[in-house]
Image 1 (cartoon, helix red, strand yellow):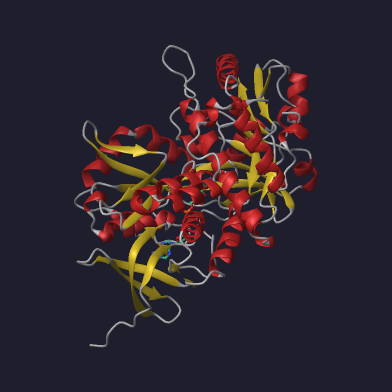
Image 2: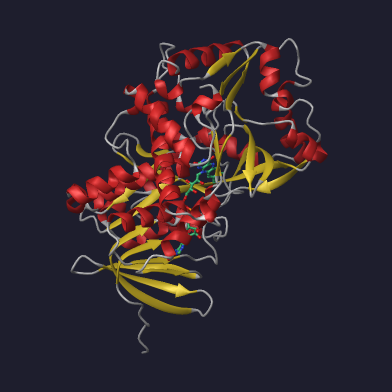
Length: 504
Ligand SMILES: Cc1cc2nc3c(=O)[nH]c(=O)nc-3n(C[C@H](O)[C@H](O)[C@H](O)COP(=O)(O)OP(=O)(O)OC[C@H]3O[C@@H](n4cnc5c(N)ncnc54)[C@H](O)[C@@H]3O)c2cc1C
């Protein structure tokens, strides 16, 4: 039998060329420039799945406008703990990006981020009260300084004219506005980061290479079998550490690792669609990311939003996402992905999670059955005067929501991200998609500290962590001066106007 050709052994293998692998790869190379890193990507370019600009909403998630991050407690008060965490995580991301921008003069990662006001918009008396309380609770923290609330129709009209044009004057409405919100082109950022990574000694990138098998060797290292999709040839490599950053493709690979920590995980794919505006006059009249409130029974990722985007220097406008159902785990995946992921160990959690989430199933069926007229009707709730001919349907990225074992309920469906790590720290996988790319830096800082505990504790790595993310170890919500100082610094380096210039 012919032997499988081998690539040189490496310290680190990164599976998938999305924002997560890019962030981890650069971070590790900064921490230890001698590390060798091999990257395998099944497509012919980096960031072509969820991280691509047209596949996600590009919201720099800071909890400024996302109402699902601030749930109302049964006593009517607002729980802002998740919002504080996400706002702080996004500040860490900006610090890492500022570090890269300052250190490397790379045009590929310039202008990937822009200030776009983040607004929440609600209709109906109950929702207006919720928004008022949310605003009062959030603005007690320095992280939300400058957020404005308004229930004055004229003021709201000046913030979002398209949303107010033609709106029923009898309808009660309110909005909040945060000028420090951002739009991020995660696709160009990711490609820029891989450009930097590839330039470094000891880094090799293989496109058209799909990882098929993972084998844990007796000495703790990993054998990775990959198929070259251009030649159909299999190749093998050995690595001391593997990161499965394959987006929707992470779950099947985690299952193939056979680590005990993978047992019981399943995935539920949810696809998305946008309406993309094709009328430049309409695009020009909107300048905000406006997030509404999810309808009852719908999953948090389907919160309707009207997004101004800056993609490749051009202003764009998207509305959505409309949820859908497909058994594919990747946009470019296979319809067998979902059935193939069902195993003896996760079938019970998957059934139990399915039974507990019948409202989600109902919601997805209703979304899938939507006609073009239904979609325009949903758009008109936010843009009463929208014209069907100004909008075309576009397919967004695929998300795979995490299902995991739960002692009490048998199985639960999660809407966040989950890092699964082997006890010996030699392999880690990232599952789930929310809040996603915005929090990549904080996710990877935690992953590095967990998988490289000894090196992370050394003074050299500690100093480097602080160079990359100066506020690490601080709780920004408790340090108003540090929030201002940090935001001013990152804004200046990233080419944004400063908070002072914005009057915040
Ligand atoms: C509709 C939608 C809207 C979103 N909106 C936002 C938002 O507004 N803000 C935000 O911060 N986040 C958002 N997200 C989430 C964000 O896009 C993701 O969290 C992030 O892009 C995930 O990055 P990743 O690197 O894990 O995966 P990906 O970018 O999907 O990269 C994974 C890569 O792995 C490759 N791959 C898969 N299997 C294999 C294999 N076996 N071998 C080799 N390569 C493989 C894929 O081809 C792909 O290139 C959104 C996501 C979606 C779908």
